[in-house]
Each structure stands twice: as C-alpha cells, then as structure tokens.
Image 1 (cartoon, rainbow, N blue to C red):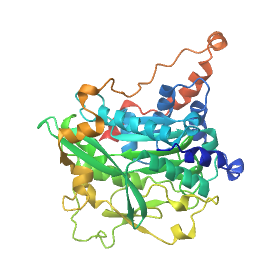
Image 2 (image 1 turned 90 degrees about the horizontal axis):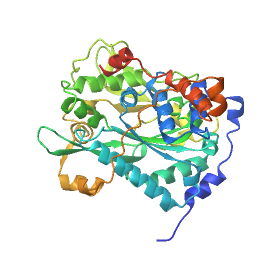
Image 3 (image 1 turned 120 degrees about the vertical axis):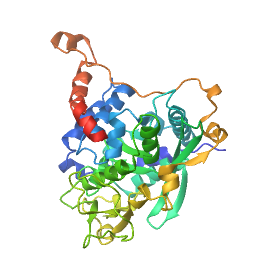
Length: 402
C-alpha cells in the first residue's frame, strides 16, 4: 500500500479564523491552552488540565463526561504537530494503538483502572486558531476515517460507531457496548455550538453509558443504575449552554402531562432540580447528538445556520431504560461476546507488555522567586494550579455521582 499524506496536506492548507481576533477564547479555554501549548508540558500535565476542565460546569454540560473525568475514567490519546506532518498510515497506527491501550485497560477492572470513554485530542496551535471551514471539515473527516471505526449513513448524517468490552465478574463472561463518536473543536467557543468546544484544536470522544453503568453495578456494588443513567442524561441536556443564539439542545416539556411517546410510563425519577415536568422519552435539538462531524458547524458566522434553525430533531432518551428499544441491548445492556473476540480486538493478555493506566495528578510544587529562577517548570506549575482550581471537592463529587 502506498504512503499518503492527505491529513498533512489539509492541515497545512487550513486558514486562520479571523472572527476569533475580535472574539477571544473564554478564560477557561485560554487557561487550558496555556498548559497544552507550554514548551515544558508533558502528556500527564495535558491530561490533568483537560480532566480538570471537563469536571466543572459550565465548561462542559455532559454529566457522563464529568463523572468519568473526576474518576480518572477517560483514556486520552494526543496527536500533535509532529504527528500531523507524518503520513496517514502513521496517524492511523497511533490511533489504533491508543484504542488497543484503552480496550486492554478497560476489559477487566480487577486488573487495571478502567476507562468508560476514549478521547482523541488533536492539539495544535494551527488547529486551535483554524477557521471552521470546509477544509477543517475535510481534515476532521479524514481523522475519523483513519480511526477505522464502523460508520453508517443515517437520516442525521454519517454516524461513526465505537465499541468497548467489560468482563462480568460474577459470570466470568464478556459483554460489548456500542456507542457513537462525537466531535469537538476550539472553533465552537462562542459560536452557537458552544457545547462542542474543546481546548487546543479538535477532539473526538467515544463514551459508553453502558460500560459506565455496568461498572458501577458490577464493580462498585451500586444498585440498579437505570434511573441514574436517565437522570444523568436529562441533566446533561438541561445544562446545555444558553448562548445568545439560543440552545443547541433542550428538554421537551410535557404536553398536558404526557410525553412525546405517550405509551411509555414514567420511570421512577427523583425530584432532581430541573427535571420535573419534562419528557423522559424524547428531547429536542438543532443538532443531532449522534452525528459527529456535522456540516452545519463549518461556517464562519457564529449564529445557527437556517438548515439547523428551522429543523428540530426528535432525540431519544428511551433507549437508556426501555429493554424494548432497539438500541437498549447494544448501548446499555451489552451484547454477550466470547473471550476470543475480545482477544482478537484488544490482544490476548499473554501478549500484553504494559497496561496504560490513567495519569494521576502530581502534587503541586512549592513556588517562589528562588525556585522560579532555577526551575523551568515553575511557570507551568502556576498555570496548572489555575486548572486544579476547577477540580471537584469530595462533596461535589459525591453529589455528581449520586
């Protein structure tokens, strides 16, 4: 097979987002960028800064992502400028190795700390300041192609599907969970798709609600997490950013006390603030939450384009709790698979050389004039301290986990 450089070509043709000159990044994006692009930042520093940013509302509204971030249950892979100037085959192998590391880490939590989600971070100043143009869309689509996950054509567009495995400690058998890949970019900061912003460039996330649910039940001893999953999903939509262009997604109010799918009875919901009076079967949006690289994102103008504004997607909550839903089994319950299938994807345990575990934050260093004079990392530690200020307290973590 010949060597190709499609990503490199697209990367080098990206143009500057001139809109950003008069609309600077929000303070929290600026703070994380300062760490991501610091010359002495190591991968562990970048993970720490991003994990801290993900924990705090309103940086990101996704409660599943926040729970995973606070529990070190996300697996990060970083691509940088050096990678982006290599061949497409080099980039594909880097992504495949990251996936294998994630699968190996997450298949059996008695052995290693699992990750419910995979985060592919493409970090570059050129991407960070890139105009959300057709070139950026093509660049992002090509990265997804090199990822190699399965894709399907759906009414909402091209959907990319990822998978992860988990061993049931009670039976010794494995299950596979499927879920869609999502897209984020720095260009979203301040635009109508603000909820899909990400520091440093472009990112793709693949988070498994089913893997998180079953881990909590099988390994943490929590009772049936079905209600927690639904409340967490509804809470995520309730927290969507209310920009000056309106919300991108929102909860649907009940009509005469009835949901969009009237024959679905209300699951047992707590009285969590903001959920009473809203539909538990469907929610609404001007973007579809299963679609990754959405064409409506790639335009300079910050407001919603007409094709998004005049179409209201009917989006599904029902699959999270209803066993009769067509997606419940593969997304939430998990599909039984053989150990051989897991070995074929992740590699047999006898071949493992190392298990890539989450990077634990380092204790902050003491700073001061004398240390700053002789320690080139002192500035970086001060920047990390800003991000560390976002990490949740034990009480906040407990509330988020309930």
